[in-house]
Image (cartoon, rainbow, N blue to C red):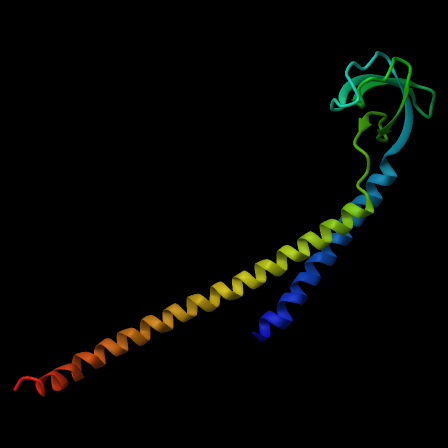
Length: 159
């Protein structure tokens, strides 16, 4: 129980903080490598407001004046020429938005919780395994003793 009450929180905290710090490095790296730009739709996006986002071609001008094109997910019903915000990488290609700090926090909490559950489950599994081994040993000893004692006890009922 000592390991459960001291080891589990330490392991969970350590794993959660490590995951959070790693995720925060990813947030910082992605934020430095990606930027948001305004692009224009090059065609109408068909569909109603209740439909899911659809792939649509867009065009934008890079920081150095280069006109680039690509496809991104856009809400349906937008007309050609409408502006949309897109994320581009250093090479100017479309990419996903950078990870948010909320994602980093959630990753830390999730991993910490998973480690806590894993440590707890491992300790209970080890406890049950040791108990089974000890029970088998005790049952074997009991059986060996019963083999010696039972003939003496059963003889008194043979009158």
